[in-house]
Length: 287
Image (cartoon, rainbow, N blue to C red; front, top):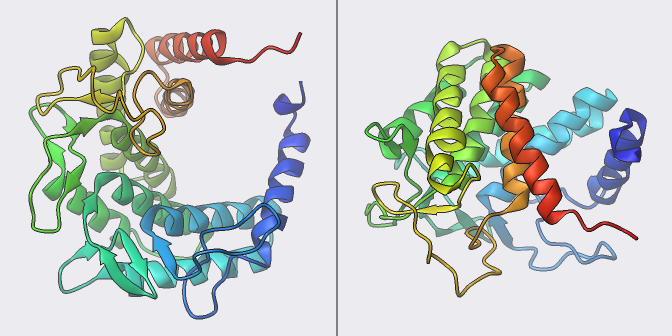
């Protein structure tokens, strides 16, 4: 199977990087986010926090894998934009979307902060930042604004006027868990790993036990199952209805990463269960 071969995966990664390498950098600041299949840019004025940070992660990671200094410079370019344009120091917030480098939507999304933390963790590993300060700052902001101690999980969204939404979901918690693992690997700070373990226990076990072991996407304010949320909007990009096979496999990956640092049988058993169920239900077998 090609997808189990490291060389094949590196080749595929290189092919993807080649598409973006000479197209993604906007010399006026940040990255271009929107491309047609032929590589042409559309909506060049638009920026979104998750896309900005994901591209940093991609090129900082690629710089380490492929030993490419030009990839590292692309990551540095994006990190500068994150710190100088997405971040508003007076308000101590990250802008969710920008247009022409000006704030458009200042809704605070835990999902966005997850990728800020992941970007700093990857930048730390790649040597773009030399201290843990930004990672610890992001942790503190997540703690102050989104963490719900009663449930051991994060809320999702704060409106521009400071109102915390009643919506609760697994997706932001999943990506925060991913970022916490990366932050621990980058810094050795146990606070990150302990939070990753807490999130994994509470989503992959406690919450999943409410739905026969699989991980549901949407919850009420008290983290009860919300079966109806976005049921009539199945193509919603960030909050699709139903069990998402890809999210079962993402949690399987995270559980294996946790197991690498803190081996325990239950991480492996649950990872296997989630992966196999997702594979059985979603794999489009070729006859």
